Length: 134
Image (cartoon, rainbow, N blue to C red; front, side, top):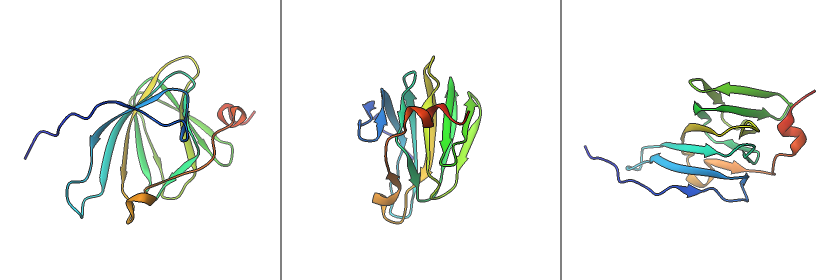
């Protein structure tokens, strides 16, 4: 057993995020048969991911603020601190902070068989998609 080394906070890249988003890695695989990764992700007000999907799905546990999650059908779900959202394997989605406050969540997922396919990044989310259906 060991205490994991602290990893510096990293700002996420603009190719995959709009606005200011930071990540603190918490857990990553040590052995070849391990898949779990966990990170604390912090979003500035209005910041958001691009559309993406995960090979093995993803759990997002909101720890502060209000998160907005979008689906390709136009549905936007608000998730509050203490709640957990699950997205199934291959489901396109995005996550964002509400426009008037910071949001943070724990992102928990398993690597794909090929780690390069764990997360498939797509186009940026438009302002209309962020707003959701009328």
